[in-house]
Image 1 (cartoon, rainbow, N blue to C red):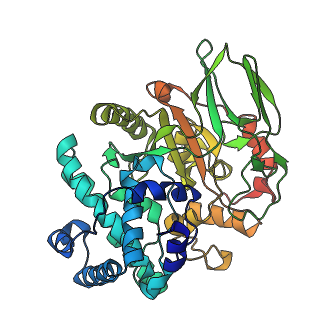
Image 2: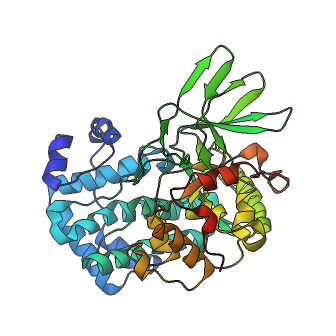
Image 3: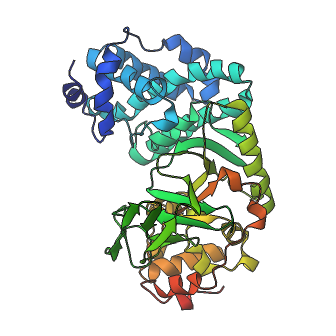
Length: 428
């Protein structure tokens, strides 16, 4: 069966282009089959599915199994995402929505995800993992299915990429934070000088930035002000540097490779951490979590050649530094210990995690605390909230507590670069 025709038949769109090259390899394998309904019924409690959701998933599974093209695609997506390579080395689709299934389209994505849990249950014993910790991640499928139904009136998945991380044995809690290996997509290279202990992150070529040094991605309302440039010669590299505050600078620096060696580059595997809600996220707990994660993944998964630590979150936007000083925010204290980098613009994190609203319409935003009021002021003044990232080479984890970046010069410059008066944000 032709891959393009199969996708067109199923009504599947916006999939990674790299999948097409894997189709022939998959079809050359012995024919497989979908998981049996008995598997889900026996393990229903692992997913926390209600009887109603279980019934709906089984109904869609039977409809897919009865359709040759859909069944083939369901098995292919399971293979390409989890079996044909390490899942953290594979580009994930935003969703797997088979339009041919109508309102059941979202449940199509459940089939490859549930298929992978059988291998994960075996891996728990093989790697001697905490079963409750790993299987607890399975319940995220139920949470997102319920969210999807609440928003759209029918079952489905709202964050397919995240759900892929919930059905494999690689997402584990270490200390206060949860960690999983990922491949970093950003064209950034982290350089380190062993003699001076100084770090420099350089942008790759052709990255579009706004005037404040943040990215123009994801429907950013601000125009591009500059595009990064990079070059390489005999014993040197040149490019636009990133200030540890998390903004790209519109200037060029040249590094001697005799003095600076690259520790992290694009597509390297990093341990990405996720931050739980609630109290306890401090400089000290973060430090212990980072060290515990490095030790855990080296011991349990020695085949994963991770180069460092990564996080992508609204908590690492440089915009927080416009709102709070270190004395009034533990988060700002933590930020100052990390080398932050610009990340894809994402205001959706604020609707989901901060305001818990559908939109960021200023007139309807809650103002119950200082964070709410100060972020709302940015929106009201024409700002665009965004997330940020960080990079920490594994060799620098032990010294993380002693490393703190000075923002004496960079923070005032960032404040002045905003498209509103950032010097007059509310203080209450």
